[in-house]
Image (tube, rainbow, N blue to C red; front, side, top):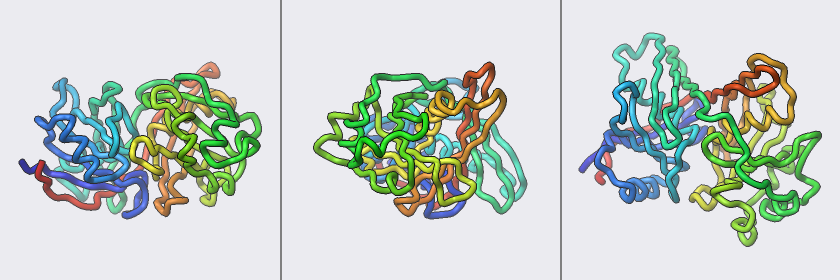
Length: 303
């Protein structure tokens, strides 16, 4: 049976930058094995399968697969799928418009706002489904360095130290002091699986405050070889949990704060992820992840 599909570049306003995404429409009736096979065939960071929602109050139910496994939640699939579905529902493509969607994901319902502006890429922003919380013991600097091809002294800067958090998907956040060290990080296969565990430590998300883009607050990289992703050009679920890193180490004042994270530069797929955080009584009480998405292709796939 043929199913419509679309591909998009997400967390970018320019084609062939950002993180590629495949979205299969009308996926009702497909089973997990079929979805995983299709995701492996597209071989992108993630492939989304859109089906009818369980609740009539919601827009759609989506399932998200990497080439190697299913995820309960992910950022660039949420942004890209919301932009696509809102665009397909529009009747006047030229006018500026806004839409609110609720996507049923493994982590629960995720509310997404989509904004269309003439002559610009669509922009979507979703509410982080959970306030970040610790998920397990953070590996030592020595263990992290061994798995990432770095020296223990390369890890940490100022008061920032490695931290393991999840806002739906766990990550180990690894601060480094410079772009040079960030660029040198790599997957060291013999020790990787001894250090990074899907259930507790998740995958490593390296970050530093240096950036070649004057408007960016952080540069990041994320590796996930056990999911079939050597390196991810943009990781919205990690940016969601990164709000907990900021809350712990940066002592931000009460109110709203907005940061820009760039990722994928080392891969030649520069991405821009907007992180907006709300603080009250010195605590993180809410966060949102935003980014642009541009449609690349469409067609039909026999499944």
